[in-house]
Image (cartoon, rainbow over all chains, first blue to last red; front, side, top):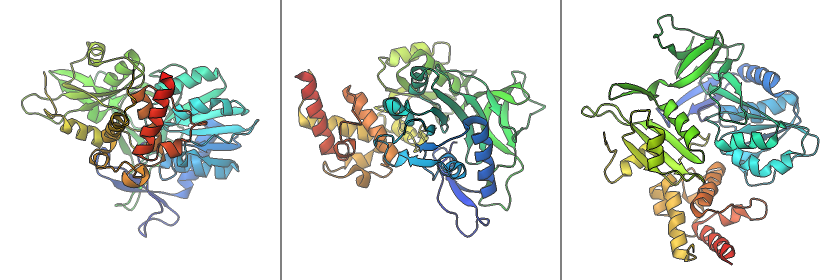
Length: 348
Length: 91
């Protein structure tokens, strides 16, 4: 799930409600309330559907975030499972006992640790990983390959505002596979959707959070994701509505740009961001990249994007800055852009 | 051969931190505890820091054998750790 969250809510909260905050890394910070029955329902739904029986939960997601609260606190409490809050000391060895059924709650950084800790996890009777908050890194697929069937992993699409919306299996290879909506989520279709089938992902359901500034949860929530429906309750993510640009008259989904780079340049971490609008140059985008063992350079990045309108600028970083939940930190990236000697370059 | 000059190692580590923490890292005292001196340097940021240092110096840190929490807690300690690793590799 995609946002950071706070601790217990102030007096404006409904009785027993938990307060979470979206971080504001891509917009203004806001506060949301979630009821205990919503937490229970989500844990029951996802736990029953994707996880199964569990003896031990290893959580890399801090519980101040919804994802960490749900699966690092509420699920183990309900299941009577012991918990290792690995996010608090990620360098500590994993205390996994032979024969245990283990759930690992993953944010992107967790996969590197799991890769190193796999000999300890191998002792478990079963290992299930739930991943959320941002795209899984190549290490995730690498570990699933290495585990050769002994690790079952699922990716969850959701947010602080919506809770879990949909899920898909995480496999040994990067895959733009379709998402399956959870059964209590209603996908609201747009009868006037454009001919290419791209629609805004708008959901309704009993697990929508209540904004602190209103008296009740919204009737529906527009997630900001663009999707293409593949069935009544299945879809593919096309991008974020804010990531759809028109560069030199051609539509560009920045999500597609990132997918292309991930596929073409394994070992290189890339993030594409729209540039601030320029009345003369029009819309454009920047690619931020960091070597993570890969040998690619700017030339390889530009070559990989030869079928796309070219990025206005390509910025190398030591590492892509990320929020605590592992998402690219857009504010830091924009700041890095502004620190360039020439500012956000427009090279078209 | 990679440099074992502590000042140069220091500078490269600081650059790694600057990419994430900007001005706060530029002003960082070499012996300051990173978790206290850098806003947002929590446990997961520490993990990212270790990964970024691994990438910068082309090494793999052993989370079991090395005392990661100690060696990666200040700029000075990180640089000392890295110099030893570089010297080991060169030996």
